[in-house]
Amino acid sequence: MNVPHLPAASVAVVLGTRPELVKLAPLIHELGPAARLVHTGQHWDEAMSGRFLRDLDLPRPELLTGVGGRPRAGQIAHSLDQLDDAFAERRPVAVIVQGDTNATLAGALAANARDIPLVHVEAGLRSFDRAMPEEHNRVMVDHVADVLCAATATNAANLRAESVDESRIEITGNTVVEVVRRQLPDRAARAALLAGYGLRPDGYVLATVHRPENTDTAEALRAVLTELDAIARAGTPVLFPMHPRTRAAVERFDLAALLGRITAVEPVGYGEFLALARHAALLVSDSGGVQEECTVLGRPLLVVRRSTERPEAVDAGFAVLVRPGPELGDTARSWLADSGERLARLAETASPYGDGLASARIARSTGLLAGVAAPMAA
Image (cartoon, rainbow, N blue to C red; front, side, top):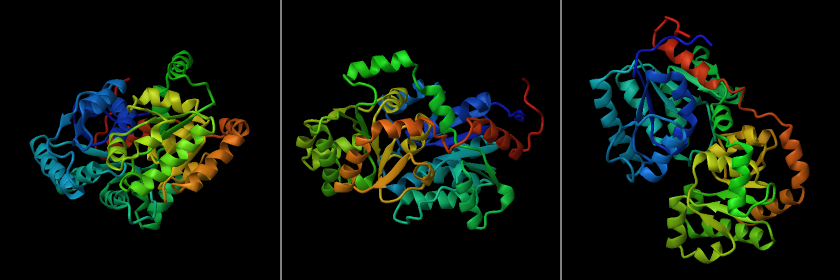
């Protein structure tokens, strides 16, 4: 694909969370020396973020300070202030943000304030749930971005419904397809990993829970863990990599007794998570990224959320929304009962997220937006 040449470190890629690192990794690789990675520190710790940088072969970022741990307004304000200084000192030819985090909104506002061309990756997602802070973030970013890279036709339709000019919209596919294909360990490595956990392919549940709606109250978290415990008691192993927020909530609400039969482990690296997900009989998660990854891996997913901005996985038959409590447990038991047939069907179902060329399309659009017309040397 003809990608315009961009000067070194001229495109600021602003992110702040581990999912953004994952989703933007192939685009950063595509941009090569032109990429200038700026991390707001919204999610930063050496054990997890540093590991993701190494696993994804990403350069060490410019790291902002004093952002993590603050409430939403504080995160955005502190990020915006430092980004404005950084862009004033070294003005990018373009800024790229992805998704709907506080870092995304801060990066978009900083670019807008300095009149720097802005690219929004994964534009047009809508949950239509105004209780989600992310919904407000993504809507605001879409309406200040110059190029809106919609992953799917549904995302593009959402933008048109909000009167976004057609000339600003490009359907690119989702970078998740590239990420999963590149980061999934080979068959031998996956087999060794499962053996290390004492698991057999297609014979276990892999669960992750971290969103505030599932961890901020004892009732919600107890409802999730009770159903995972019931699955384990019925004989299906449950592997549960625990997000730090979830572990803290378990301790705060005194729910550790519900983990007795569940194999609760520390967070795993991205490639390890993909390997575990690839062979799970069932995924249970409230993660947005897992809703996309499951379609590339061909695995069924119960989305423990009241709404989703990613209906494509549901529409394609990979996923279903469930509430914490009996609905989660009943659906899990039903899906596990016909696991073989379901897995065979999903293996033949194409991911709705594109052909694996999203990053090349986004890089080309970024170069054209920046006004750099010379083609990149082969």
